[in-house]
Length: 358
Length: 205
Image (cartoon, rainbow over all chains, first blue to last red):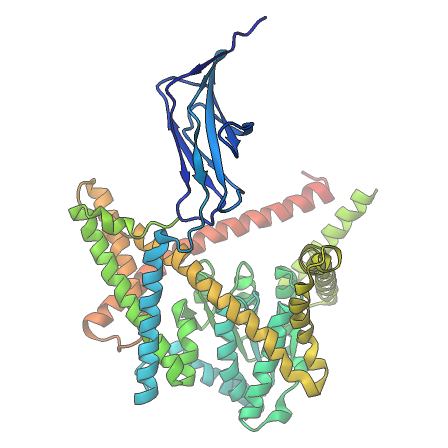
């Protein structure tokens, strides 16, 4: 069978341009045609009359193509062949098109403005806190209960168990947990109560050891510090929780503190701790795990309260100031939501589009 | 033959772990220690072959990327606590890791969480059906009242207190729904384990 291949220079309306807001390694091609092609083949050359190399093909319903992994600053020429039923139609050669680096992604300008506003508010309130001293923070019941729970463990002559979550120190919740561990370690060192901190990550263990050691030194009890009480168990989620459960039923701590990032092991921990009769205080920003902690623990820090805990317990101006700055951010977000809802009502599409994320 | 041995080991370890539901016992301790030891060894191998070797040592030794010596040196500082005189140097890799992670997470959180959630709350209250308008109003109010609950700078009294209480009610309703949904998933995991015991191990079903 002979296929008649007819190449016609015809009307594929085609343009090629540097991809906006990229790192200078891509060029975007867009075209349209009245013909119902089955296939489009894309060709590229570095000179207008040189050899055109096929770089890709797309189905006939597509009308865009992004050529990637290009050399920034280099110029290229493109053409497109549309194919259907043995007929090939070629577009004109488009070029030279240069792939240019954009050093600032303008589509993310609203994000930059948001971050600058939040940072400015935090810096302002930190400065104000340093000048005026204490700033007001409302009572958080779960945090008041921590000191009582540690006192209970001391009276009963039993240890305190502190679980800092199962993620590493690059996780914000783990860092917040370490701040709280510092305050808990100060109290337990003061009272001479043993503190067990089993960790699921080796770096978290190292950090916990440093935090607890410094806390003990700060309250004048460096002799109380025992590095063997702060152990790395394993990276595996359920192996870790089975070991922590074993610690709970054998060491029988009077107080269990679960503060950090948790996943499916949260209910296993909380239920086992409850069965031993311990007072349990939990805190996490994982929405799926909060229900289990709320159901099985005596007190729960919900989401943001975990991050506020360190400022609340320490009352340090820097931390109080940053918390105030974040509160200012929340007020801005509430205002933005109200304006956004009004935008839907009055069709202010430009405001809604400001929050498009690429 | 190996498959049969594997099934028997899996079944006996499963029963040993489940024995914890009664009380702590030597079988559970044995299973726990096997689990911890095997998983720690497994992750040590994974971390070396999937992370340390291809990202650090192979580029250094085989591709001549000499600047990889810097992150390797920072990693070695993690062992500084073993030598009391230089134990303070462990703070360098810890603070470096935390600082980089926090800086990277700022744009991640703004781009991945805050902006999409804000835009998702720009919901129409007119031009839609009554049910959709009511549903949208619930979502908008739930988000705003929950944000008010997490406002720490003022005591929750008066209007602020009422708004915060409404916010906590919204959260508790969502916690209840999430609880029920996740319990269903956990029960299906349990069914999977029981099926393994009764079908693969005992062959009674």
